[in-house]
Amino acid sequence: MTELTSLTIAEARDRLKAKEFSAVELTDAYLNAIDAANDKLNTYVVTTHDKAREMAKASDERLGAGNGGALEGIPLGVKDLFATRDIHTQACSHVLDGFKPKYESTVTQNLWDAGAVLLGKLNMDEFAMGSSNESSYYGPVVNPWRAQGSDKNLVPGGSSGGSAAAVAAHLCAGATATDTGGSIRQPAAFTGTVGIKPTYGRCSRWGIVAYASSLDQAGPIARDVRDAAILLKSMASVDAKDTTSVDLPVPDYEKAIGQSLKGLKIGIPKEYRVDGMPEEIEKLWAQGVAWLKDAGAEVVDISLPHTKYALPAYYIVAPAEASSNLARYDGVRYGLRVDGKDIADMYEKSRAAGFGSEVKRRIMVGTYVLSAGYYDAYYLKAQKVRTLIKRDFENVFHEGVDAVLAPITPSSAFEIGDKELASDPVKMYLQDVFTITVNMAGLPGLSVPAGLDGKGLPLGLQLIGKPFEEETLFKTAHAIEQAAGKFTPAKWW
Image 1: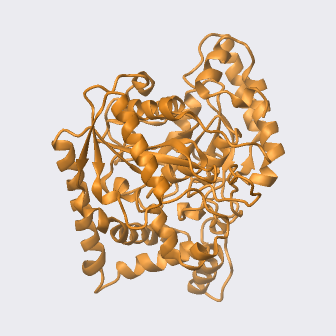
Image 2 (image 1 turned 180 degrees about the vertical axis):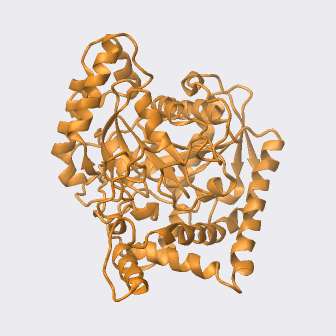
Image 3 (image 1 turned 45 degrees about the vertical axis):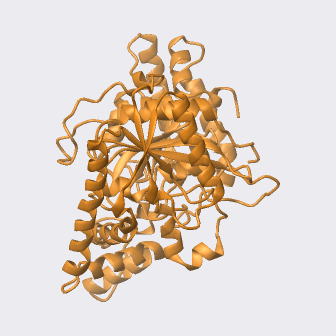
């Protein structure tokens, strides 16, 4: 890693303004790092060399004129779920072969307006469906972390595995990601990075390929808490093109970094102590409690009684919405088209060839729970459970709790092709057990690295906050980060 690629966004921003190096030099350092590492890590599905240099050159001109934006000259990676004008946007699916949109997603447009530079599109689970980044049409992403004394390749988590791995391996300064049931926070935990899923409605969903519209939310993955705060400030906005985006001022999240935790009340949910939880996760959680007490916060036990119903309810709501959203991929106007004897045959053949097995599985589950005779029994009931989960959090916050501290993952990163998980999709779905309640309730959730397990692999802690109170999460996560330190993988690629 060259010195330039090891800088955080905050450091690079300040040094670019001081003219210690140019945006073109910084961008070239990242492009060279990607070219050297991507064969081994498979984080990028497309690298936009010419576009990146052109954007960096424009950044240098603006910096020279003294009118640079908040992210002027900062090179970022973009998850393949975000539409980027005239650039590969396929949600890492075969069904969208060759698709290059004629429009830009609101979130990425906000970043370019702030002066950021596009390095390329990042690998992900197909249509954001997965917890390990193994369902991508472009093959699995490899986690830059390895267990001590092992050369086995590990998953980076999913669905934003390319985003998390690229940030951890210093192949971008930061990355966009999305979170439907944990797809920002789980990969961040597996790679020793920081990821925040903001409150539902904080970032526009316009121009992001839809998985489950009532759950999807964009957010950043970054190297530290400050960088995540800087990125979210530029990503978030109200948007007339997305009626679910909320018209609230976007705070300067960076100002929350370093604020005192005195007077803050942190809740510890007893329902998150699940059967068979590894001792290391339990120990890490207790350590997190101790750090927050040392920082001046009050820690109280709380109950979120409907947590146990969250996983089954989520795996009804999300596939139901996915089956509806993915009905548009039919081979008619764009993407993959497999000819058939008539239009129905063409639909069937195009969808059969275009979708991977995990996406097909979720479409079938979703179509089933929405079908006549089952809609009331499954989908409506799941929505009622969702309301109860949201009410649990509301009750806790009403009692004066400012944020909740919980684990993120039941383990550290596992091997690519893990036989047990590959043969049993339900075991893979259990990876989301600690994260999905946040999406079901529409709350903000942040993943912060908190330690290493016995194999030397990163583990994270999760902070869950009140709606639109991301600043509380940033200042609390910063206290954990200060106590735990930062974690970088040893370079082997």
